[in-house]
Image 1 (cartoon, rainbow, N blue to C red):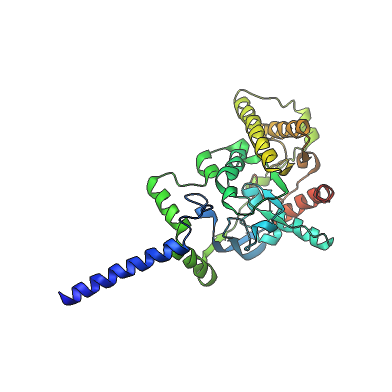
Image 2: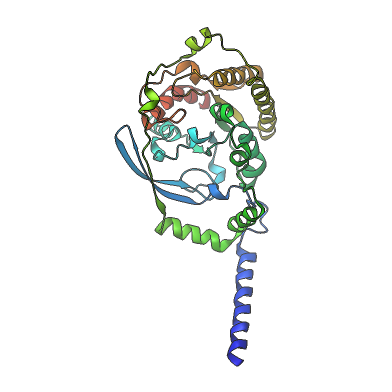
Amino acid sequence: MKYLKLISINFVLFIIFILMVEIFFGYWFSENNFGIYMRKERRINWITQTNMNNQNYKFSYKRNFWGFRGDEFKPKDVKIVFQGGSTGNQRMHPEELTIVGQLNKFFKDDNIDFKIYNSSTDGKSLKGYINDFLFWFPKIPNFQPKYMIFFIGVNDTLKSNEKHWNYKVSDDRLGKIKDYVKNNSIFVDKFKIVKNKFFPRNILAYEPNSNNLYENFIYTNYNAAKTKNKVFDDAEKPKIINFGKELNKLNSILIEREITPIFITQVMYNGLENNELFNINNKLKKFAKSNGHFIIKLDELATMELNDFYDRVHTTPQGSRKIAKIIYPFLKEILN
């Protein structure tokens, strides 16, 4: 009984110690704690292995404490943000070979002191960009970017499982409790730091097969798309109308936050063969023009070729570089 009592006392003292450490050093009572949001997008280090166009890549896919792709930074230093879905995140690419990574290299090569920070997350559509301002960005202290680049359109043509991708939160109650603990516990946070440094996640082997993608390949450029008399059909109308409403919501947020948007239209592997994407791009252009926003019309400028994509919507490093080279002169002029 004496030993059992001693063990019980020590156990209680240990629990009290844990609770005190959590209270004083954890994020539970922080005004900017992440709550149940973004847990899966923070403190990530995956050793990733891919093969594209017969080129092998092995690299660390990292997302930092704030949920951005790449290394840690001070939020006050962030002036330019790149917002996209998986086509902007590009987690199958080394960071330097993503569109954002190559844009940053172009700035560096031209001795221009700009850096673009990548907040893209897989599957995110326009609704997700709006939610970022509600649930993610307000949690980042001293975060006030001057410019925000929106690489937008493809996911708004797909919009499957919208809640999962756009809200970045577990669907079930137990999952939300787990995420709340993992986001706010100091012990979990420090464990992640040690784990990511010394025991990164297992290698992700990914070797896309794009052989069937390019059978009878024809690239539909903007001029060709216009001649195909692309108009809304009944299935597309609600999606396009909703896209316009969400653009107006985003616009109100950007005005309130004094952020200058730069919109970029998108293409798929076969250009603008997809009728929905063609119409969404046009809706985005009209919106940008009517509100006096910058827009880079990638859909009118790009002619993508074989091996520029490894599936219908995701570019290879070769394709990413081509897109970066197209949009860089426009960004350089706008940001200067």
